[in-house]
Image (tube, rainbow, N blue to C red; front, side):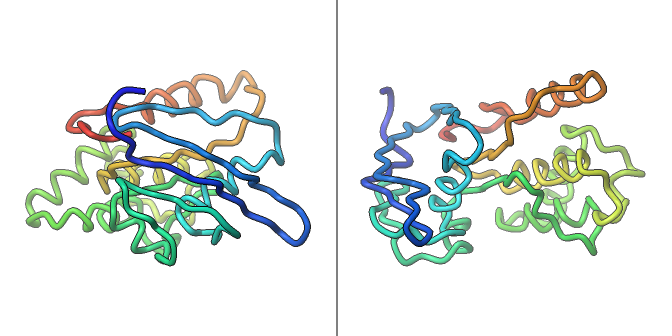
Length: 197
């Protein structure tokens, strides 16, 4: 493994009643490394991601981010440390338009208004949203566009660690091109991404 670990888990367990969805996971992700977690539906991949961000509190074990134990930290504090997650089901602000969603995500960077507006414009361009789509209420977006909006929010926040929880499905002919474009845009490293995993 090259570089120091930005993320480590030690004996991570998540139980739902008598079922262990995550069972003793030890994981190290180095700074700048890209990892892919593969498994069948129900294997615990999404649950593991939610344990990393404390959307689910682990039953036992530890999650360390850049050497800091995250035990007891709420999800919003973990996000402020620089971990961003894009869930399988998009998590966007339905009552806001796309531009406002991305603007809110970029606020964590504490930029001056002019720079903030520039970041939002760059992200909108990168995810392929024109002015009309940027002003569309998020509630009216198709599922695919909601996914793009959430990816834009993740990029705008400039996380140190990006977790992309994607469902594994067969591609149909109508979605194949859009899916390839989406996955290409979500690859790391991106401009200004040094030190991200």
